[in-house]
Length: 405
Image (cartoon, rainbow, N blue to C red; front, top):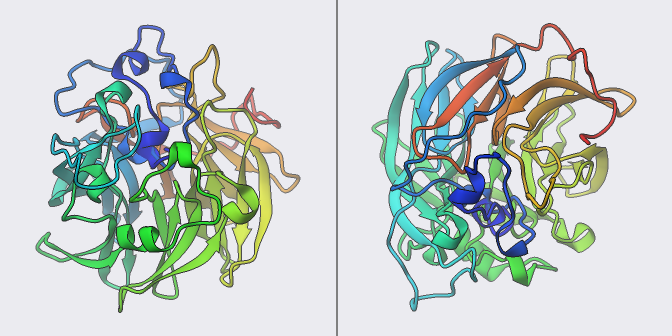
């Protein structure tokens, strides 16, 4: 979300789960993805999701019962390690520190985020729990974020926390990088709340600003973690041995408030970064950039919409996860319009799967299937899924050579 994914998807539950299934934009605000992190239903949320048209026939459910599923990684044996936003909480820090401005803030926090494992049969087991989670104000539907992503450096598992920091109801649990130990306990490696306070970007957006950030995704290169500051608009490098944080690039210097979300490393050793953009969604407004390890940026793909995931296949073809189609009738985002597209050599988009509901992350499994976090924000706890997509049949018959319309 733009203030952090949570603040970006500022939607009330009534608006999100309305009978028409269309989402309207709270207070007329334009919301970027940097805030999606906080987009989950409150602990007391009970409405079931409305029925949506079924996804394309190549999409099947792999695991269910998840709480704000976000980024994930596979291990060699096929086990998924999954970040979950959790259920938010009710602890307020008003009067203690700078708060996120209404209607997105003030936030409240709770220790309800977690990391889960999912085996090859789809069985879900909690690995680490009691991690920082937050939720936006009731005016924005108590949207939740917590653990945003996970990744491995060597044999060590690391978690990106986006639900922490004083402005999110956690004065003693900053946003940052945690090392997850074998017994499920964690230890702090880097304090990203302190880092962003001390290292502001060139052109922050005052109307959509998260004091503690709400970073959305990370990736590994040469044993260092690279984090996408989605709300502030930068890519940071974290040395997992020392905890030192340095900035690779401030994307706001040239691109303004673009809300970078997805980040992966290509076979060429460069970073590929996709962006959500602000809300409401505009067809074709998002991009993928290539960023070299020394911070030089160039445009790689255009004509995309609401990017939250990227993945290369074994033929080095880029797949893009779009969380929503373009807005219609005042809605900032539209549930049930998420899709996966593949970039062709000519720069066109081939439609590979449709009918996803606010998907939030995507990776290839060793079986050649694409796995996607589905119902990733805005729905009651337990609604989240991991779905798998069989792309062996190639593009869908109604392949779209142009951006979603």
